[in-house]
Length: 234
Length: 221
Image (cartoon, rainbow over all chains, first blue to last red; front, side, top):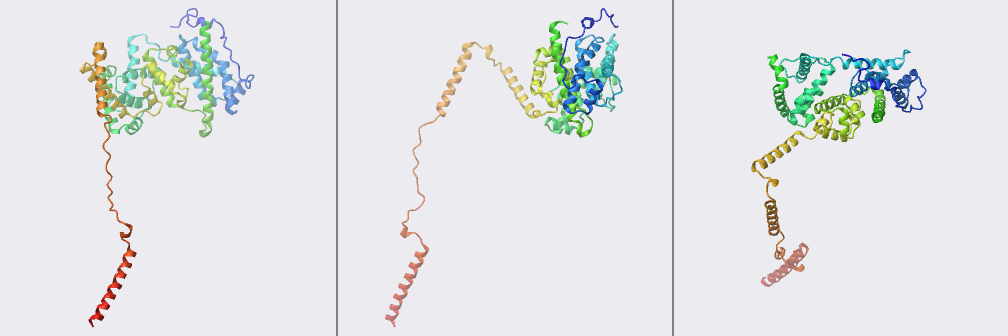
């Protein structure tokens, strides 16, 4: 439930006024408007492009951070979401078409989408909800590692569930030996399915890799986290 | 916002800005080959996911992790978001992260696609270490559990045995010099086989012989 403004954890920050963080703007783009900045980024030299992006960051980062912070309860999450916003900016800035709308509105719309993404799986309010999210993460791990006997197509999942899956997998592979752990890491994170490629990466024999892979799969199937999933499937 | 937090926030923002601008410059350079001005670095994203999972399982926040290492919070955020290219991630950072999170640095290298030590040799080393550890555990050899005089006497005994062996194996008296035997028979130059001389001598002998024979036939007839 959203807290009242007076109780909101970000109130102290929001009421403290604008940040007194002032970085000097690059001299070349100090006075440039949004249209000029976009033109410099897409058509200028490397130095001009970097200078323009730096200007956009210095002008708008504070607003983005404060916007995100007003909707997220922790500063650490705010940092993460704000960094995600700038990552999207890096990817999409060359596709930005100037229509007269200020850059700030574009940046805030990205921040808004990022916040929605962050809250797309609301915090679990019940044990059933908690189990549902965890089961989804475990199912994703089992699919990625081809632990089911029948092949299932990899599915698109929520980024938050993916993060949970990463954490669960990291916990599970700590119980494996070095070679087994590395094979599973390559299969899960890099989606490497070819034993020859895995053998090449690890500097080991192909048949040895197959043996270790079989052992690792058996251990993971019998792990306390995944064993319940396979019992249900059986 | 307290002065301390403000200072920290300022440093964070400044450093993040530098990382962002640097990455933008890298995107710019990669734009001319394939016309898409984005350097997609899946390796850095994968490393970020793994790092985040390791940090979450270690129960540390980014601020706590930054406090335990020499890396800044902005660098951690950028690493977890995949904002720093894999080629720019320094081995020193990996060492610090591995030490703090209790991870194996080889796992980080593997995720980043870098060269790792061969699995066989590592496995063999581990097996030898385990074997020696078990041997020590079963034989109850432990210097700390023995009294100091027993340890001292054992060390002294080892030293004496070592010295004895060194003296025993060490350089002994010199063997007598071997008499050099010349395998060649010393022949005077006059008596050495010389084909020219031998032929000349043979010719002289024949002449003398024929002369003698002539004299003899004259005498006979």
